[in-house]
Image (tube, rainbow, N blue to C red; front, side, top):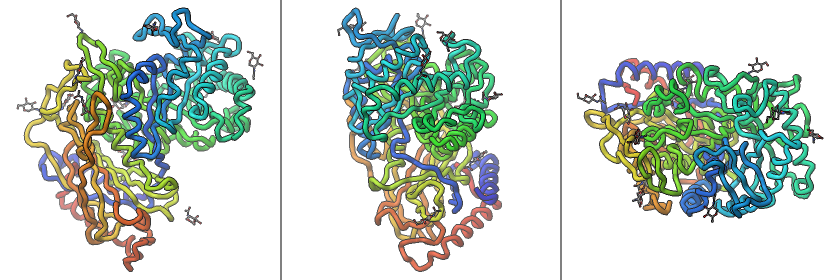
Length: 610
Ligand SMILES: *[C@@H]1O[C@H](CO)[C@@H](O)[C@H](O)[C@H]1NC(C)=O
Ligand SMILES: *[C@@H]1O[C@H](CO)[C@@H](O)[C@H](O)[C@H]1NC(C)=O
Ligand SMILES: *[C@@H]1O[C@H](CO)[C@@H](O)[C@H](O)[C@H]1NC(C)=O
Ligand SMILES: *[C@@H]1O[C@H](CO)[C@@H](O)[C@H](O)[C@H]1NC(C)=O
Ligand SMILES: *[C@@H]1O[C@H](CO)[C@@H](O)[C@H](O)[C@H]1NC(C)=O
Ligand SMILES: *[C@@H]1O[C@H](CO)[C@@H](O)[C@H](O)[C@H]1NC(C)=O
Ligand SMILES: *[C@@H]1O[C@H](CO)[C@@H](O)[C@H](O)[C@H]1NC(C)=O
Ligand SMILES: *[C@@H]1O[C@H](CO)[C@@H](O)[C@H](O)[C@H]1NC(C)=O
Ligand SMILES: *[C@@H]1O[C@H](CO)[C@@H](O)[C@H](O)[C@H]1NC(C)=O
Ligand SMILES: *[C@@H]1O[C@H](CO)[C@@H](O)[C@H](O)[C@H]1NC(C)=O
Ligand SMILES: *[C@@H]1O[C@H](CO)[C@@H](O)[C@H](O)[C@H]1NC(C)=O
Ligand SMILES: *[C@@H]1O[C@H](CO)[C@@H](O)[C@H](O)[C@H]1NC(C)=O
C-alpha cells in the first residue's frame, strides 16, 4: 500500500470523527489505489463447520440442503463442510451400538462426553450435501490408545462412505486445549504434535484404501494445526503451550514441513476465532452488538487483536506451502448469543469478516453450526431453550452467505478472482473491498470487476425485531432516534464512462433486526429454505472519468459489479483499458485527479464518513 493511501485513510478516519454527528446527508469519496496487494478470492470462501453430534439433526430435514444448493447455484460451487468441533475428540467408532442406532451421544446431546458412532453413521449423511460439496472430517486425536486405532478406523470408515467427497482430514480439534481438558500432559506442544501427526498420518497414508486411490489429486489431504487460542491475546489462552502456525512451520528447527512427505499431504493450516464469548464472566460482560458491527474492532479489536493478529499466521502458512483457513468460527463462543449472533448486524459482520479475512490471505472461513446454538445461521428442528421454544428456520445472519456468494462468484468456470481491502473505506462504520479478475498479486494483468461497500454504522430500527427461530427475550429494546441516515458513495473507478454497473443490496430494517432481511429483495422461506422472489434490478452508470455514485443507507451492504461486456477489459488504472476509448494512458491521471479532489474536499471539511 502506498504512503499516499495510508495518509488518505488516516485523513478520512479523522474527518469521520469530527463531522459524523453533524450531517445526515453524507457523501464519501473512495479512491482505488492502483498498487493494492490482492489475495485470492475462491468461490467457496464461505463454509460451515458442523458439530459432529448435530449432523444427524441437520440432515434430518431438507432445509440445509436447499439453502446450500442456493449458494451453489450462485457461486458455481457448494459451500465446503467441515464435520468437526469439540465432540470430534469424543467420537468413538464401534462396529455396532447396543441400541441398534447409528450414533448416540452420552449422557445426552447438550452435555455429551462421548459420541459413539458406527460405520453406518457416515453413510447416513454421505449423500446429503449438494453434489460437489467438499467435506473435511475431524478425526479423534485425543484418544491415543493402541496408536490411535480409533482414528485410523474412523478415517477408513469416513472414506468408505464419502469417497471423493472427502477432501481433507483434521487430526483433533483445538489441540491447544488438550492439556486443559486432561487429554495430554504438560509435555504437549509443537514437538509432540508433530511426532503424533507423523504417526497417525503415516498409518493412514500407508493403508490399503488410501494407496488404492490412483490419482494423487483425489487423495484426501490433511488440514494441520487446528488451534483455538488467539495468538496475540495471552489472557484468553486456555493453557501454556507453544502452538502457533509460525511455531509449527518454523524453518530448520524441526518444523512440520521439513520432511517432504509431510509437506506433500498438508493441504492447509487451520486456526479458530470467536471475537466475543459467553464462556466466562469477564467476556460475558463485554458482549455487544455494536462492537460486532464495527469494522475497526473486527480488524484490531482493543489493540491489534482480532483479524490483524492472523497476518503473521498467514505468512507462516504461505511460507510452508499451504493456505491458512479460519476452520471454525462464529460471532460469540460457547454457542452464541441471541440478540447479537442472530441479528442483521451479525450479517453485516459476516460479510466484512469473510472478505477482510480473504484480503489478508485467509482462504476460507467456516461458520460453526449446532442444531440448538444461538449463533447458527439456520436450525433444522424446533427446540426448547431458556424457557422458550424456538422454531426451526433461518436467522438474519444467513443472508451474509448469500451476499458473499455473489461477491465471490466468477463469470466463467476458469475465471480467478482476487480481493483487496480499500484503505479509503476503513473506519469503524465503513468498510470496502475491490474484487479483481486475475491471479492474486498480479497487478499488471488484473481488471477491476466488483466493489463492495458496507455501512457498518448501528441503526436500531423498530421493525423486524423478532423471529420465530430466535429467543423473544432478546428482541431489540433500544432504538435509534430520528431518521435513518443515508448517503452517497463516490468512487473513482477505472471503468469506462457509460458502462452499466449492477447494485446488489444486503438490507435489513436495522442492526438489531432479526427478520426482514433481504438481498436485493430476495428472501428465503423459513420452513423450506427455498429462495423467494427474484433479485430486483438496480443499475447505475459509470460517469465521466470512471466516476461512479451509489446511495447507501446506514447499516447496509452494496455490491457493485460491471454487468455489460464480457467482464474483462475494464481496466485496472494501469492503462490496459480494453474498451479502447483512446485515453487509456490517462487512467493513472484520473485517479490522481480524484485523489486531489478528495483531499481538497476533505480539507474543506465537507466529507462525512458514513
Ligand atoms: C435410536 O433409534 C430409535 C429409532 O430410530 C429412536 O427412537 C431412538 O430415539 C434412538 N435412540 C437414541 C439414543 O438415539
Ligand atoms: C495419551 O493420552 C493420555 C490421556 O488420555 C495422556 O496422559 C498421555 O500423555 C498421552 N500420551 C501421549 C504420548 O501423548
Ligand atoms: C506409531 O506409534 C506406535 C507406538 O505408539 C508405533 O508402534 C508405530 O510404529 C508408529 N507408526 C508410525 C507409522 O509411525
Ligand atoms: C513459539 O515458540 C516459542 C519458543 O518455544 C515460544 O516462546 C512462544 O510462546 C511460541 N508462540 C506461541 C504463540 O505459542
Ligand atoms: C474482537 O472483537 C470483539 C467484537 O466483536 C471485541 O469485543 C473483542 O474485544 C475483540 N477482541 C480483542 C482481543 O480485542
Ligand atoms: C426460566 O424460568 C425459571 C423459573 O421461572 C427462572 O428461574 C429462570 O431464570 C428462567 N431462565 C431463563 C434463562 O430465563
Ligand atoms: C414457529 O415455531 C413454532 C415452534 O415453536 C412452530 O410450531 C411454528 O410452525 C413456527 N412458525 C413459523 C411461521 O415458522
Ligand atoms: C485500516 O486501518 C487500520 C488502522 O486503523 C490499519 O491497521 C489497516 O492497515 C487499515 N487497512 C487498510 C486496508 O488500509
Ligand atoms: C501478466 O501476464 C503476462 C502474460 O501472461 C505474464 O507474462 C506476466 O508475468 C504477467 N504479470 C504478472 C505481474 O504476473
Ligand atoms: C442497539 O441495540 C443493541 C441491542 O439490540 C444495543 O446493544 C445497542 O446499544 C443499541 N444501540 C443503539 C445506538 O441504540
Ligand atoms: C433516544 O431518545 C431518548 C429520549 O431522549 C433517549 O432516552 C434514548 O437514549 C435515545 N436513544 C439513543 C439510541 O440515543
Ligand atoms: C427470520 O428472519 C429471517 C431473516 O429475515 C427470515 O428469512 C425468516 O423467514 C424469518 N423467520 C420467520 C419464521 O419469520
